[in-house]
Amino acid sequence: MLSSSLSHQLTYLLCIVVTGLALKLQFKPFVRMIKRMRWLFVSIYVIYAFGTPGQYIEFFPVNYAPTFEGSALGILQIIKIIIALASLSILFSMSSKQQLMLGLFILLTPLKLFGINTERFTARVLLTLAYVEALAEKEQFKLSFSRLKELHAVTNSLQVEDVIMLQSPAFNFADKFLIVTLVLSALMLAIFKVFT
Image (spheres, rainbow, N blue to C red):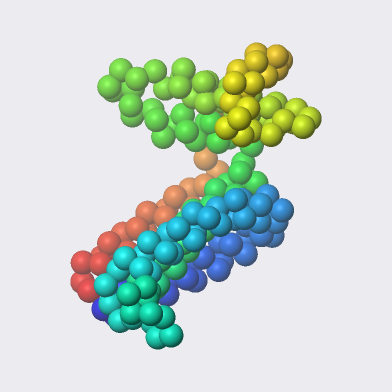
């Protein structure tokens, strides 16, 4: 129970730190992203709060009352999603498109053992991002279910030409320090989990 409450406190602390950094680096895009996710957050909270057994919250009819345990779990899941969104926002603000694709390419490299062409997959993802950016810059285009038929015609009219170059720079001291820190942190967390 102590380790569970400690991990929850660390999750809340991580959410504060990562969200603060995301707001500092990309305030408007991050706030816009959170606003778009609001109905997902409400749905998650309702599912956990009303679907998890436990002690009912007062001032609600018994048949429709949420539980304390379900509310806590729902909020925890929402916080985890916010951490993921904030981390992505930080990653996108601090990395170029080519750097992101290089990272994806390096992560997918082991799949070559199974005959998967990682170069082609990475190139397709990069071209898709280029199409999305060009589509987003097109004036007065708003994606909706009623306009899905128009989407194909619009993408065909977009002129997206790009040269894909993935150059892997050598690791510097900061990169090596970060890798060692992450590995040691993972080992310490694993040891802490084993002995608690």
